[in-house]
Length: 236
Image (cartoon, rainbow, N blue to C red; front, side, top):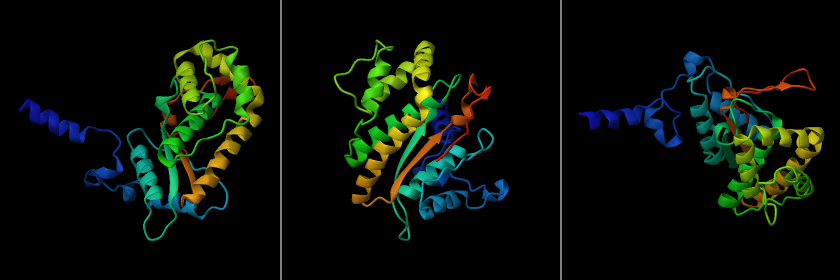
């Protein structure tokens, strides 16, 4: 009896559903008052001529992660002739300390996951470009980081792990990156933009990045702005 109860519980354990678990999915659109939320988010991405940003919010356990997984499937495996997108879905907890989060570590996590997914699923290698010079400056203060060459996937994965587990490393990285925020953003857009062009030759309409579970993170007081940095729950 105990083994059977454990088996049943493992099936219905309260965790986000994956797209292949449609038999367990309960449509709550009418109760939420957001009819067709996945379709509306997907349609905005499909129709836009320029990059878009959307934020999905809701109470804990309301189904945000489940809907984001359904959005990923809708964009990756479209029907009715809709364009296909290359989607990278990131779980914030994998890279970020939920008790202390700010922009630099989010950017590093996004670049890292995009680089790894592009290499593994599309055989596209992101070129470090602008990051190379900034990386050398950053390494001077993080002696535990040593690589023969910079790879945006493996190198940034090690950097993410270091700053997640070390408050001292987090402070050092923020101090190095924040005064140069615009250039870091430009660098990320440049290297990812090159990858998007290559994705086009493989039949993809574009790249979509989904960051989930940011609502569980605690933002720090931003000394320069005099207020805490914002942290939306889930964004594309």
